[in-house]
Length: 172
Image (cartoon, rainbow, N blue to C red; front, side, top):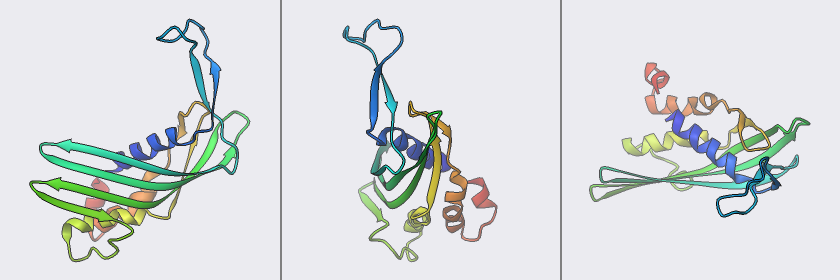
């Protein structure tokens, strides 16, 4: 689960900011259609803010899952070498699973009390990620220089899912 959230976070961060400038790439042979090659650069300014909506759909053996994560991203600093410090704060999580004619839905804005349903408790545990800042460093090409510490963000989620903070949470 840590890898899933890390991948979602990093991929969303890499494509979210639209403040990219273009420049001709070295080589100048032209693109696939004969046009010029363009190198996209990530050029935000300190203080830029974006609201991000990440959606993922998976299908496997008749099970369909849609997941949505909604975050606010802030540019904390832009260094001389082009590295960019970015802070993300997750605001909402949604999950919709269709399996064998049954639908299970979770929305962190609606499902505040999930204590009566063991399946929903797993999704509710993800809500412990909400409103906690996570920082990362990217370069001007959108590459991740320093990944966020997802274990700090997910530790409460894992504790909530294991129920007691036992070895189960360490294994997740």
